[in-house]
Image (cartoon, rainbow, N blue to C red):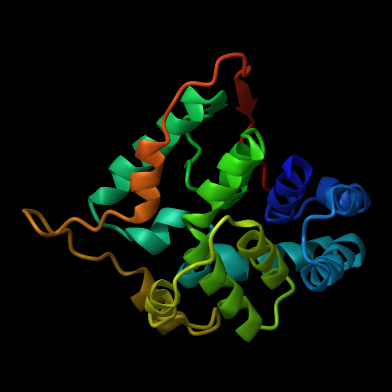
Length: 238
């Protein structure tokens, strides 16, 4: 599972010349472990072909429109769980602490809930643990897959693969709750502005929106003796 998670993490990274050149190696890594269902693997091959043969600038523009510009497609897990609520900061701290206690040190400027980074961390953990942690945000991954399907985007396959690898399938009501949220088109500037508008912060009892992912992270915290710390450089963008 380690190679597959690393491959999926790489596929969700901002397109670069290095990523285009590594498309064949990524495909081989997915084939080597053979744990992604065939129907999903075929869709991943389509994305790999697009990355390998497409114009780099067009690939980068597509990536930005999907994942950077559209809030409903954000690659930051807690964007979908907490939005701008005060719980988000503590959730970030908890997740970063989990990484560090298990051998993954990240740069200060990196946000720990970035999906490619989360997958990189899971690739360092035993398979059973990785699958269990993967199941916690599975409802987010399935909602992202549905939104990408609506846009006929090949990136849908990555999130289908993650749902397939999770230890438990997401609950329908959790997925529906996410899909009921606004999902504006990247060309609709007014709708995008409204979607990114800051939400009011609520204080006091009864206003916590802690998600099962956070509870799982806290419950699963433990040191991993013998695991060397890995430092991940910041992604570079032109």
